[in-house]
Figure 1: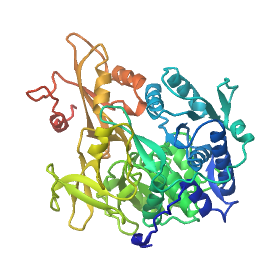
Figure 2: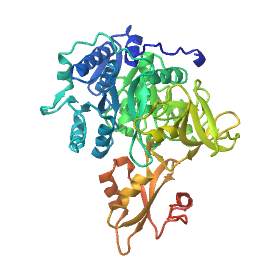
Figure 3: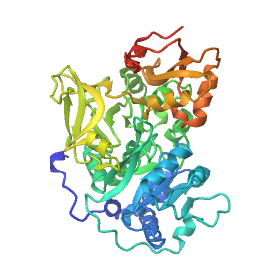
Figure 4: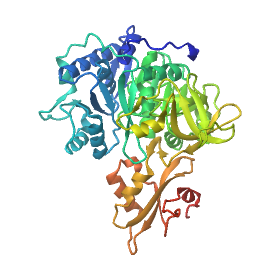
Length: 525
């Protein structure tokens, strides 16, 4: 495929209807396989169109938002695509968030209804108890107990609904869905995406780079609520008529291997999507399956830079490359990537055709090859804005260009090498973590005077959160106690993996913490 010849979506375009039309000829083929069973393409379209009708019948109107707080299962794409089919805007929520974070997202998006997994219903209830939301009804996927009057099961919700005959007459630039991106102050930012955006990522990366076909079985460790996971587990495979293996539980090595071996639904993945931390954990596991036990033809990695050694070890074991790339919530998926048959480990590869990359200095001028610059990207999948956040929108979305927040170096062969973040944000296991948020939480402890948080490489070269803590005079506390303190107040993935107690923190004359000096400190033995 020549990406320059990819046709733009027509003037009337609904992404959900687009996927249903692409797969109209394969109604009996498995679209999704989860722990409960298989959902065929025909069933997917039917159930999603019933969700669309039920949402409209319940009083949710076109362009209003609905909260989607679900573990990965067949009901997730049913609800997501059903909302889009109706012209309603699903707001995909990170299932790892605290109740406070969910409450903020619910209030900020002004969601009118909530679609939730049974296991996450207590989290939703805790968030709703904080008040100041507009949720008028709760729909629960596979409830395990009787539900209160303001909630109903998804099965009941769509039981009497006839499939909506026609999709909402949306256009390519109509708002399709929201994804939340972590902010430097800890509060997430609502990235507003259009109906056309997932079409472009599927055409330019899913088809052109990955070369997915209907023969593929795709499995993503990254969940559907992530931009990376949404492409891997929905937009890309469904655009090609492939099958998707979904997993509700955490992507531990053991859970991943179980599915690699075809022990869930009998489907062995041919394409696996992961992140460097996950690949490192799997390669270190004594239960790592033999090459003959799996059907992998290709793996993709994003979320954080892939150390060369990890990629080479994986290729040596399985005979297939890990295609490393970088994307973002704002651009919806990968725009800079290594290529099948052209992998340069230690780099993030080359621009995905259809996207342009520039590296700029602090004054906005392009830098020369070999020099570090801020990465700017231009492409058709950029979000419209951050909802109700004009300053951050202007800072990130600069005309046709989007400022990534990452620093890169362009090599002589046109590939790009990661150079760190432009701000203090950290990526831990592929998820952004705000140092400020962790520091503020640590300082809530009665024994802590000051705290500073940085990213420190582990033995595999992957970034982990490290905290430097100054205790109040005469106070004592263990690192285990502080870790538990943070885990109780923030999403578990945000806690510092290591804590070093110091007498003072390096600061500027104006009192700003000099994190770069902490990064240069040699760890205590």
